[in-house]
Image (cartoon, rainbow, N blue to C red; front, top):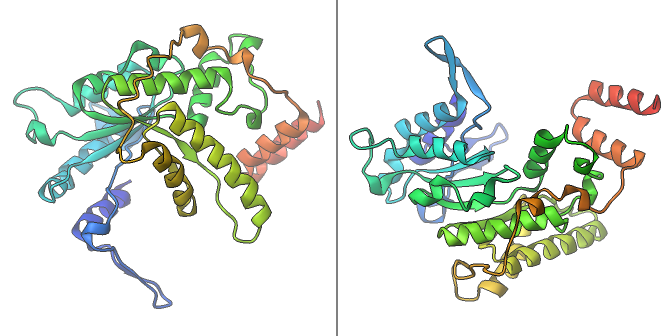
Length: 320
């Protein structure tokens, strides 16, 4: 974690150049071409074992946040920008309120003037989290955008409702797409909530990594990415993100065709969306099946870096 903080500091100081053993040079582009640094602190569920406060481990989230604010926030402000954070793994409005209290500590306690309070981007994993109409962070004006995350949301569904019975049993993972009724309800309400609060809604990540050796696979995958981004832009999302630079042109093309000369879709308030708690929890309406092949595919993808785990899963599957 400290190495990561040092890398961030070096990037802002422009002292992060590197020459490999083969003599290849790596250096930052000119300031005007650099991407904006957005720091992702650890989630609230992680602590920092190296720092104890009254004998208790410190919050990993706050350690990451505080270290960056103390060492690098001033540099960003001097450059005419500001410290930005990506607050992942938020599962309730109370967790968002906790961030809000840390970002806006009150009169006389803030190190920087109000205009330089950190900007934030958050993803929401709480299955019912957007039904309250928005986080305190949005109300306080600290949150610039919120993002929909497919797999994090599904993980939270499983974690919170795994003991609720068969109505919360999902089909195999490849069948649970963004067109599932409960996922559609979640994403449409996210756009409505964000835009009502004046925050941008960011679509999910296109996780496909293009292969320059298999054009047929690329063609099929790109078609799925295009469908996904077309649906997001039509829903009112203001942008999206991708896992590989080769997907940027496709993503930009789709969103530019909807945005036109506008920088966002905040004017699209989605007054047509009326989502209930039942809609958000309609997991049982998800089409799909559970098969042995699906179990093996999922297990292989999750255990590929842990051979012992895969072997144990394979033994279990063969004995059932």
